[in-house]
Length: 190
Image 1 (cartoon, helix red, strand yellow):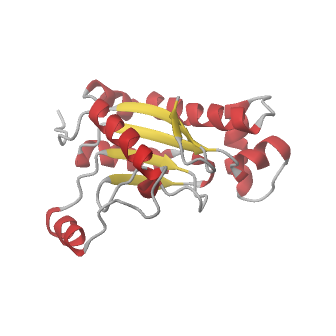
Image 2 (cartoon, rainbow, N blue to C red):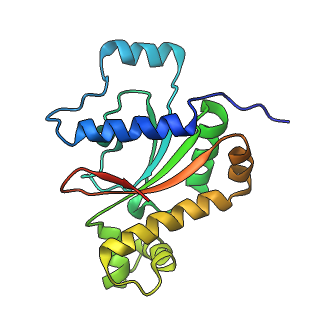
Image 3 (cartoon, rainbow, N blue to C red):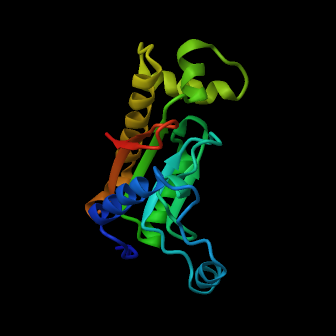
């Protein structure tokens, strides 16, 4: 049987994310440790992130800032519309199995361009792969905020249905969906 790296318990990681988000909401600069010492420590001793965050590629959504995290604290996977495919699942498996992360957060957000495109348009090209996945998640929902919530919850469900992730869940991994409000800075865990 495969051994799994030990990390911070999921409940403790979630509380740390929530505390970090509260600090972020009134911060003027990122309080996360980005010092030369942190770079040196993570270079010499490796990374030990306490949570995996799947976030949208939107430039207004910066998970390390949103959760007041520094270098080596979050394992961030970014893709437009925070959709999940085999590439993201492989990254999650790596972070859970080899780095000991016990919490996966799918972080959707308000005013998401990918959700807007899926709900209100019919894009072509490679963007269609993203919007088609979002359309599957949101169904006939036309309210963009509600659609963003449904999309984050759908991505969390896709992660939970992965056979390897199910194995990791038996070992303490938890998956949560959340929505980041780009105006207020608040994160709502769903």
